[in-house]
Length: 202
Image 1 (spheres, helix red, strand yellow):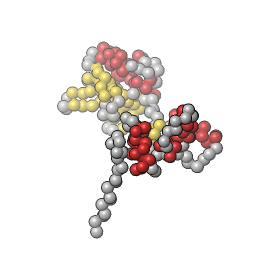
Image 2 (spheres, helix red, strand yellow):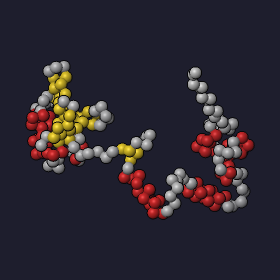
Image 3 (tube, rainbow, N blue to C red):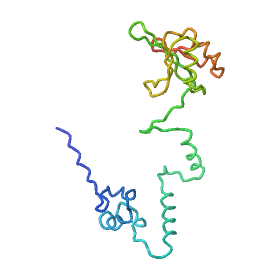
Image 4 (cartoon, one colour):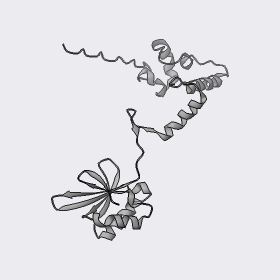
């Protein structure tokens, strides 16, 4: 038996601005949309927001009160203590979340050196992670190119992070050069990629 097709979602469009009713407040003229919203979509917005504006001088105060009320509305997990509120306020700075709720891991400070063979004979040495130690990649590529008398350039890798591509197999001397040129980079933080495995250089 075949699965039933889900029914299409019916979207209510505003008769004034043409946007979906939920987005009228972001449209060109929300004030003109309010009467239509009161008549055709009463449950979309709070009554205070789409109520007819009073001609008295207290309109600004009402708007301020409404703004405070809307600011106070949030998604809670049931904990109402102020200590928990302070802890949750500091957590978003520590843990970054990616779309889908995945937690972004903090990058380890390490330099990864990989030798890539192209066209059976040509070799490129890729240096990743120098920027994590405060090294400017454009300066580093110039120094590497001068030291090893070869072409070196800063390119974006497959993960959209910048890396240095140096022509030729310079992996035999590069660790000593990196530690001498940039003392902030410890030898214990330098790794080689050999046969798909990460091997410490030290």
